[in-house]
Length: 297
Ligand code: NCD
Image 1 (cartoon, helix red, strand yellow):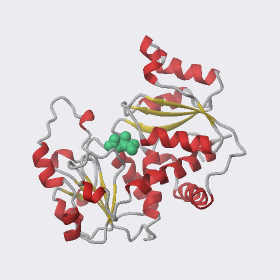
Image 2 (image 1 turned 30 degrees about the horizontal axis):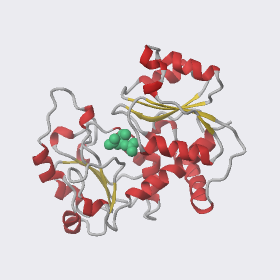
Image 3 (image 1 turned 60 degrees about the vertical axis):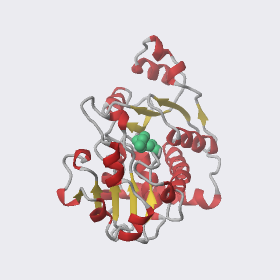
Protein backbone atom coordinates (compact mmCIF):
# COMPACT_ATOMS: atom_id res chain seq x y z
CA UNK A 1 0.00 0.00 0.00
CA UNK A 2 1.29 3.40 -0.93
CA UNK A 3 1.87 5.92 1.84
CA UNK A 4 -0.48 8.36 0.16
CA UNK A 5 -3.93 8.18 -1.36
CA UNK A 6 -4.50 11.18 -3.61
CA UNK A 7 -6.54 9.54 -6.35
CA UNK A 8 -7.45 6.09 -7.60
CA UNK A 9 -4.21 5.97 -9.63
CA UNK A 10 -2.46 5.28 -6.30
CA UNK A 11 -4.28 1.94 -6.03
CA UNK A 12 -4.38 -1.24 -8.08
CA UNK A 13 -7.07 -3.86 -8.50
CA UNK A 14 -5.16 -6.08 -6.04
CA UNK A 15 -4.84 -3.35 -3.44
CA UNK A 16 -8.53 -2.50 -3.66
CA UNK A 17 -9.46 -6.17 -3.36
CA UNK A 18 -7.26 -6.52 -0.27
CA UNK A 19 -8.77 -3.39 1.29
CA UNK A 20 -12.27 -4.68 0.65
CA UNK A 21 -11.42 -7.98 2.33
CA UNK A 22 -10.39 -6.09 5.45
CA UNK A 23 -13.52 -3.90 5.26
CA UNK A 24 -15.64 -7.06 4.92
CA UNK A 25 -14.10 -8.55 8.05
CA UNK A 26 -14.90 -5.31 9.91
CA UNK A 27 -18.45 -5.54 8.58
CA UNK A 28 -18.95 -9.00 10.01
CA UNK A 29 -16.86 -8.81 13.20
CA UNK A 30 -16.68 -5.08 13.97
CA UNK A 31 -13.62 -2.83 13.75
CA UNK A 32 -10.94 -4.20 16.11
CA UNK A 33 -8.48 -2.04 18.03
CA UNK A 34 -5.34 -1.85 15.91
CA UNK A 35 -1.91 -3.16 16.89
CA UNK A 36 -0.43 -0.23 14.98
CA UNK A 37 -0.48 3.44 15.86
CA UNK A 38 -1.44 6.52 13.96
CA UNK A 39 -2.03 10.17 14.79
CA UNK A 40 -4.37 11.78 12.33
CA UNK A 41 -4.96 15.45 11.57
CA UNK A 42 -8.17 16.25 9.69
CA UNK A 43 -7.54 19.34 7.59
CA UNK A 44 -10.90 20.26 6.09
CA UNK A 45 -10.83 23.57 4.22
CA UNK A 46 -14.28 22.78 2.77
CA UNK A 47 -17.43 21.72 4.59
CA UNK A 48 -18.01 18.06 5.27
CA UNK A 49 -20.41 15.92 7.28
CA UNK A 50 -20.06 12.32 6.12
CA UNK A 51 -16.41 12.24 5.07
CA UNK A 52 -15.00 13.99 8.14
CA UNK A 53 -17.25 12.12 10.59
CA UNK A 54 -16.54 8.74 9.05
CA UNK A 55 -12.76 9.27 9.08
CA UNK A 56 -13.00 10.23 12.75
CA UNK A 57 -15.21 7.29 13.68
CA UNK A 58 -13.03 4.89 11.68
CA UNK A 59 -9.82 6.20 13.28
CA UNK A 60 -11.18 6.19 16.83
CA UNK A 61 -12.64 2.70 16.40
CA UNK A 62 -9.12 1.50 15.53
CA UNK A 63 -7.81 3.25 18.64
CA UNK A 64 -5.94 5.91 16.68
CA UNK A 65 -5.61 9.46 17.91
CA UNK A 66 -7.39 12.22 16.03
CA UNK A 67 -6.51 15.87 16.38
CA UNK A 68 -9.45 18.08 17.30
CA UNK A 69 -8.81 20.77 14.72
CA UNK A 70 -10.99 23.18 12.78
CA UNK A 71 -9.74 25.59 10.16
CA UNK A 72 -12.01 28.42 11.40
CA UNK A 73 -10.34 28.42 14.82
CA UNK A 74 -6.82 27.85 13.52
CA UNK A 75 -3.96 30.20 12.72
CA UNK A 76 -4.85 30.05 9.03
CA UNK A 77 -7.24 32.91 9.94
CA UNK A 78 -4.10 34.85 10.97
CA UNK A 79 -2.54 34.28 7.58
CA UNK A 80 -0.45 31.17 8.25
CA UNK A 81 0.33 29.23 5.09
CA UNK A 82 -0.94 25.69 4.71
CA UNK A 83 2.69 24.50 4.40
CA UNK A 84 3.50 26.01 7.81
CA UNK A 85 0.39 24.44 9.34
CA UNK A 86 1.43 21.03 8.03
CA UNK A 87 5.07 21.51 9.09
CA UNK A 88 3.78 22.33 12.58
CA UNK A 89 1.69 19.17 12.73
CA UNK A 90 4.60 17.03 11.54
CA UNK A 91 6.85 18.55 14.22
CA UNK A 92 4.26 17.47 16.80
CA UNK A 93 4.19 13.87 15.61
CA UNK A 94 1.21 13.76 13.23
CA UNK A 95 1.65 10.83 10.84
CA UNK A 96 -1.40 11.16 8.58
CA UNK A 97 -3.13 14.20 7.15
CA UNK A 98 -6.67 13.81 5.84
CA UNK A 99 -7.29 16.83 3.71
CA UNK A 100 -10.17 18.42 1.81
CA UNK A 101 -9.61 21.57 -0.21
CA UNK A 102 -11.28 23.47 -3.03
CA UNK A 103 -8.06 23.38 -5.07
CA UNK A 104 -7.73 20.61 -7.65
CA UNK A 105 -3.96 20.43 -7.31
CA UNK A 106 -2.86 21.65 -3.87
CA UNK A 107 -2.76 18.25 -2.15
CA UNK A 108 -0.69 16.86 -5.03
CA UNK A 109 1.98 19.53 -4.58
CA UNK A 110 1.88 19.23 -0.75
CA UNK A 111 2.56 15.53 -1.10
CA UNK A 112 5.72 16.33 -3.07
CA UNK A 113 6.82 18.91 -0.47
CA UNK A 114 6.34 16.58 2.51
CA UNK A 115 6.81 13.28 0.73
CA UNK A 116 8.62 11.28 3.40
CA UNK A 117 7.35 13.16 6.43
CA UNK A 118 3.68 12.20 6.64
CA UNK A 119 0.97 10.40 4.69
CA UNK A 120 -1.69 12.31 2.81
CA UNK A 121 -5.21 11.07 2.24
CA UNK A 122 -7.34 13.08 -0.16
CA UNK A 123 -10.81 13.67 1.29
CA UNK A 124 -11.81 15.71 -1.76
CA UNK A 125 -9.79 18.08 -3.92
CA UNK A 126 -11.68 20.61 -6.03
CA UNK A 127 -13.57 18.95 -8.85
CA UNK A 128 -10.66 16.56 -9.46
CA UNK A 129 -10.57 13.65 -7.04
CA UNK A 130 -12.34 11.98 -4.12
CA UNK A 131 -10.80 8.51 -3.89
CA UNK A 132 -12.24 7.40 -0.55
CA UNK A 133 -15.76 8.15 -1.82
CA UNK A 134 -14.95 5.96 -4.81
CA UNK A 135 -13.74 3.17 -2.53
CA UNK A 136 -16.93 3.20 -0.50
CA UNK A 137 -19.04 3.38 -3.67
CA UNK A 138 -17.21 0.41 -5.21
CA UNK A 139 -17.50 -1.53 -1.95
CA UNK A 140 -21.25 -0.83 -1.93
CA UNK A 141 -21.52 -1.97 -5.56
CA UNK A 142 -19.55 -5.12 -4.77
CA UNK A 143 -22.14 -5.91 -2.08
CA UNK A 144 -24.76 -6.34 -4.82
CA UNK A 145 -23.00 -9.56 -5.86
CA UNK A 146 -23.17 -8.82 -9.57
CA UNK A 147 -19.72 -9.20 -11.17
CA UNK A 148 -18.30 -5.80 -12.10
CA UNK A 149 -17.93 -7.03 -15.68
CA UNK A 150 -21.74 -7.43 -15.88
CA UNK A 151 -22.85 -4.47 -13.81
CA UNK A 152 -24.65 -1.60 -15.58
CA UNK A 153 -24.43 1.75 -13.85
CA UNK A 154 -25.80 5.20 -14.68
CA UNK A 155 -24.17 8.21 -13.02
CA UNK A 156 -26.65 11.07 -13.22
CA UNK A 157 -26.43 14.77 -12.46
CA UNK A 158 -23.93 17.59 -12.33
CA UNK A 159 -20.90 15.69 -13.61
CA UNK A 160 -18.98 18.79 -14.59
CA UNK A 161 -18.36 19.96 -11.02
CA UNK A 162 -18.06 16.50 -9.51
CA UNK A 163 -14.83 15.10 -8.11
CA UNK A 164 -16.89 12.02 -7.18
CA UNK A 165 -17.49 11.04 -10.80
CA UNK A 166 -13.91 11.72 -11.89
CA UNK A 167 -12.46 9.33 -9.32
CA UNK A 168 -15.31 6.88 -9.87
CA UNK A 169 -14.51 6.53 -13.58
CA UNK A 170 -10.92 5.59 -12.63
CA UNK A 171 -12.25 3.12 -10.06
CA UNK A 172 -14.60 1.53 -12.62
CA UNK A 173 -11.68 1.07 -14.99
CA UNK A 174 -9.50 -0.44 -12.30
CA UNK A 175 -12.12 -3.03 -11.32
CA UNK A 176 -13.27 -3.83 -14.85
CA UNK A 177 -16.66 -2.12 -14.78
CA UNK A 178 -17.04 -0.90 -18.35
CA UNK A 179 -20.82 -0.62 -18.79
CA UNK A 180 -21.53 2.76 -17.30
CA UNK A 181 -23.29 5.84 -18.62
CA UNK A 182 -22.71 9.46 -17.78
CA UNK A 183 -26.07 11.20 -17.81
CA UNK A 184 -26.41 14.96 -17.54
CA UNK A 185 -27.65 18.05 -19.32
CA UNK A 186 -25.15 19.10 -22.04
CA UNK A 187 -23.81 21.96 -19.88
CA UNK A 188 -22.90 19.52 -17.08
CA UNK A 189 -20.79 17.03 -19.04
CA UNK A 190 -17.12 16.37 -18.32
CA UNK A 191 -14.57 16.80 -21.08
CA UNK A 192 -12.29 13.97 -22.23
CA UNK A 193 -14.65 11.08 -21.65
CA UNK A 194 -15.64 8.37 -24.09
CA UNK A 195 -18.53 10.03 -25.98
CA UNK A 196 -20.33 6.68 -26.25
CA UNK A 197 -20.86 6.75 -22.50
CA UNK A 198 -22.47 10.20 -22.52
CA UNK A 199 -26.24 10.68 -22.55
CA UNK A 200 -28.28 13.84 -22.24
CA UNK A 201 -31.58 12.01 -21.87
CA UNK A 202 -32.46 10.67 -18.45
CA UNK A 203 -34.84 8.08 -19.88
CA UNK A 204 -32.20 6.70 -22.30
CA UNK A 205 -29.46 6.75 -19.68
CA UNK A 206 -31.52 4.80 -17.15
CA UNK A 207 -32.68 2.09 -19.54
CA UNK A 208 -31.88 -1.34 -18.11
CA UNK A 209 -29.26 -0.31 -15.53
CA UNK A 210 -28.68 -2.14 -12.24
CA UNK A 211 -27.61 0.92 -10.27
CA UNK A 212 -28.21 4.65 -10.53
CA UNK A 213 -25.74 6.94 -8.81
CA UNK A 214 -27.23 10.41 -8.35
CA UNK A 215 -25.03 13.46 -7.95
CA UNK A 216 -25.82 16.82 -6.41
CA UNK A 217 -25.92 20.07 -8.34
CA UNK A 218 -22.75 21.58 -6.86
CA UNK A 219 -23.58 25.28 -7.03
CA UNK A 220 -20.63 26.22 -4.84
CA UNK A 221 -18.29 25.19 -7.67
CA UNK A 222 -20.07 27.11 -10.42
CA UNK A 223 -18.01 29.77 -12.18
CA UNK A 224 -19.47 33.26 -12.09
CA UNK A 225 -20.86 32.98 -15.59
CA UNK A 226 -22.49 29.60 -14.98
CA UNK A 227 -26.24 29.64 -14.46
CA UNK A 228 -28.72 26.93 -13.66
CA UNK A 229 -32.35 26.88 -14.68
CA UNK A 230 -33.45 24.95 -11.62
CA UNK A 231 -37.01 24.34 -12.79
CA UNK A 232 -35.87 22.91 -16.10
CA UNK A 233 -33.23 20.80 -14.32
CA UNK A 234 -35.80 19.36 -11.92
CA UNK A 235 -38.20 18.67 -14.75
CA UNK A 236 -35.66 16.78 -16.87
CA UNK A 237 -33.13 15.31 -14.43
CA UNK A 238 -34.73 14.76 -11.03
CA UNK A 239 -34.77 11.02 -10.33
CA UNK A 240 -38.15 9.71 -9.22
CA UNK A 241 -39.61 6.32 -8.36
CA UNK A 242 -41.86 6.41 -11.43
CA UNK A 243 -38.92 7.04 -13.77
CA UNK A 244 -36.97 4.18 -12.22
CA UNK A 245 -39.98 1.86 -12.43
CA UNK A 246 -40.40 2.72 -16.10
CA UNK A 247 -36.77 2.29 -17.20
CA UNK A 248 -34.88 0.12 -14.71
CA UNK A 249 -37.40 -1.44 -12.33
CA UNK A 250 -34.86 -3.51 -10.39
CA UNK A 251 -32.30 -0.74 -9.99
CA UNK A 252 -30.73 0.30 -6.70
CA UNK A 253 -30.09 3.97 -5.96
CA UNK A 254 -26.92 5.51 -4.60
CA UNK A 255 -25.94 9.10 -3.79
CA UNK A 256 -22.73 10.30 -2.10
CA UNK A 257 -24.66 12.95 -0.16
CA UNK A 258 -25.44 15.60 0.78
CA UNK A 259 -28.75 15.31 -1.09
CA UNK A 260 -30.83 18.14 -2.42
CA UNK A 261 -34.18 16.42 -2.17
CA UNK A 262 -36.53 17.40 -4.97
CA UNK A 263 -33.67 18.69 -7.14
CA UNK A 264 -31.67 15.62 -8.21
CA UNK A 265 -33.62 12.96 -6.29
CA UNK A 266 -37.14 12.62 -4.88
CA UNK A 267 -37.60 11.80 -1.21
CA UNK A 268 -39.67 8.78 -2.16
CA UNK A 269 -36.67 7.34 -3.95
CA UNK A 270 -34.05 8.41 -1.41
CA UNK A 271 -35.96 6.87 1.49
CA UNK A 272 -37.46 3.92 -0.40
CA UNK A 273 -36.48 0.25 -0.41
CA UNK A 274 -34.14 0.50 -3.41
CA UNK A 275 -32.00 3.18 -1.77
CA UNK A 276 -28.46 2.22 -0.69
CA UNK A 277 -27.68 5.77 0.42
CA UNK A 278 -27.32 5.08 4.13
CA UNK A 279 -25.57 1.79 3.43
CA UNK A 280 -22.97 3.86 1.57
CA UNK A 281 -22.56 5.97 4.71
CA UNK A 282 -22.00 2.86 6.87
CA UNK A 283 -19.64 1.39 4.29
CA UNK A 284 -17.68 4.65 4.36
CA UNK A 285 -16.63 3.97 7.94
CA UNK A 286 -15.57 0.37 7.16
CA UNK A 287 -13.58 1.23 4.06
CA UNK A 288 -11.88 4.25 5.65
CA UNK A 289 -10.99 2.14 8.69
CA UNK A 290 -9.45 -0.50 6.40
CA UNK A 291 -7.46 2.23 4.63
CA UNK A 292 -6.23 3.84 7.86
CA UNK A 293 -5.19 0.47 9.26
CA UNK A 294 -3.27 -0.28 6.08
CA UNK A 295 -1.49 3.07 6.12
CA UNK A 296 -0.65 3.09 9.84
CA UNK A 297 2.87 2.29 11.01
C1 NCD B 1 -19.25 14.77 -2.14
C2 NCD B 1 -18.11 15.75 -2.14
O1 NCD B 1 -17.84 16.42 -1.16
O2 NCD B 1 -17.49 15.81 -3.18
N1 NCD B 1 -19.80 14.48 -0.89
C3 NCD B 1 -19.20 13.62 -0.03
O3 NCD B 1 -18.00 13.59 0.13
N2 NCD B 1 -20.01 12.76 0.63
C4 NCD B 1 -20.31 15.13 -3.12
C5 NCD B 1 -20.99 16.45 -2.99
O4 NCD B 1 -20.57 17.34 -2.26
O5 NCD B 1 -22.01 16.61 -3.68
